[in-house]
Length: 313
Image 1 (tube, rainbow, N blue to C red):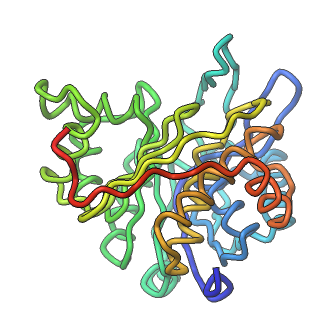
Image 2: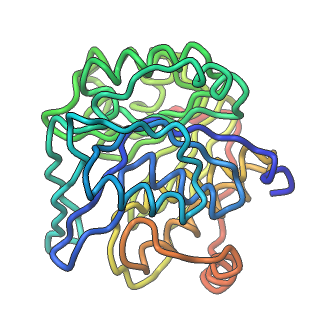
């Protein structure tokens, strides 16, 4: 990642506290991505909003301590800092109960955003961040400024609308989602898709999306681009929790991709980082890159042969 120290990535959306049975930990998809990007040496900036309360004060301190730029995190005098109740079922699937409305539902558009986003290498945003009108309008303006738009799908019922998701899909350059989200979204637009590749081709053709990445938990991840399809197997590890694993995957992907690394090396690192994070507690555990590299060397998996062009099934 030779270019990483000069890279600038803006992350727009939710910052919050995840309330686990054992206590609270900082979270929110875009905050997690920003944290991991910074840990990987990428300059990450958050555009978000916290409440003028104790949770907000503590969350701001956590972000500052992690090195994430917080100059564009706004203070809300009316709405509380976001909290989420997190539980894990017997299959290690994470369940979230997200309070609404909260401070990040009211992210205001400000003039300093113009230069920040226009000069950034990428803008990362989640589908959840536009659930309320104020933040939705701000995101629309930021998307018009961004050069490379990265959408992280985060479907949390009842906080998503197919029409709005479609609007975001039309503008994205890189889409990241999991298998369940791929099925849900593709079924909105066609009932004829049966296979993963059929669902991918539907979205790519309908919304002109250059790149789609699908995370598959214990089955690894897949990348679909204009000319190639790549698949990576997951690591055989003991999972502590899966909170934030997809966010770390996206951060690893971007840190490598924006540094112009080969796509196979990029996805190998992203899958490895995600696996490493699942062995830790919480979405944003402290770690060094050297630890991740050692972990990947220990659990290295072979990637599949690339296929040119995309197969029909």
